[in-house]
Image 1: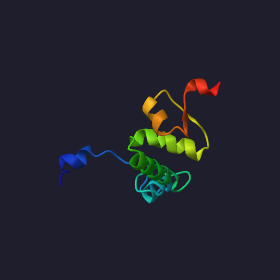
Image 2 (image 1 turned 90 degrees about the vertical axis):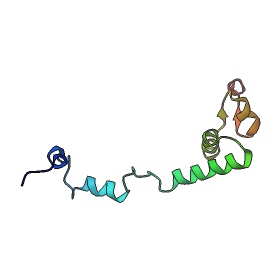
Image 3 (image 1 turned 135 degrees about the vertical axis):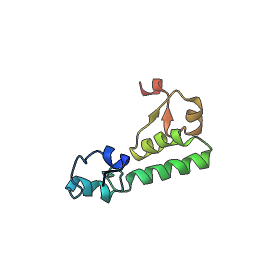
Length: 96
């Protein structure tokens, strides 16, 4: 019996199905492992909560959330971000 066209073109695996590498990725369902479990999810949850409460884009509030978590100022030229989060943000000239 000859192989079907799909079977004939299938490439061999780079690593055996039962190798440690295959198990590591299978355990995380194809996603790279989080170095500190739950950190990324909690950061996004905080950023999304800030975005909803202050009606600001989640992309910006992710940086705000990281600044708050690290107890740092977020330096930006974005006027809307400076106005919405004055307790966390500052202009570059304010650092001098």
